Each structure stands twice: as C-alpha cells, then as structure tokens.
Length: 145
Image (cartoon, rainbow, N blue to C red; front, side, top):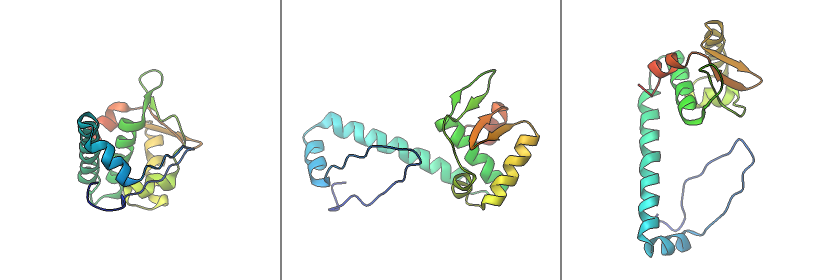
C-alpha cells in the first residue's frame, strides 16, 4: 500500500465468496483522508502479521507430525466453534490436502497423523469435518500455549 501501483498479494477461498475490487489508487486516496480508516487498516494488518509470524514459528518443527498437530491447533483456534460437551468443531469441510499444504507435508503424512489422533480419541475427522475432542491436547501442543 502507498508504494506499488498494484497490491501484489493474493488469496484463495475454499467456500463461495463475493469479491469486491477497489483500485489501489482509490483505496489509498480514501485511506489518506480518513485517519480512523487508516488506523483500522494498520491494526488489522498488524494482527494478521502477528498471526502469520506465530504460524511460521510454530510450524517450522522438523517433525512432520508436530507440524500437522500445530496446524490443527491453529485451525482450531482461528476457525473452531464450541460444539457440545467441551468439543470444538470447524463448521465447514477441510481436506487432507489443505491440512498437508499448511503443514508443509504430504497428504499421506497428514492422513496418518489424523488417523493416529482419531485412534487416541483426540480428534474426529469425518467427511472432511474436524471435531476436536481433546481440546486441552491441542491447546498444550499448539500455537495457543
């Protein structure tokens, strides 16, 4: 922002969304004239940066198993909703491939880690939906410590 002609970051969505495109020069002009908007923008940017820094810190473990558990903990924290009896679920589907990409590992490794967590009754993964049964485990072993 305030530097390049085009904003050079991109994103992808796994669900249907509406996208509004605002040309950079127009957004910058509006932001420059509205200090409250500019402050809000930079606070949101700071929060996102902190989240990404934590993800990088905690997901750089050499063990693929640890990276998958860390990724699941981050997903639980950021996307989870209270479900029932102390469980947390993510209310939309997440594929093994997405978990693997976020963990920096293969789909097979992510699948094996999730299979083990299911066997240990820490997690339920059915039809691409995650339900965290042992929330304390993910709080202790994830970014949230």
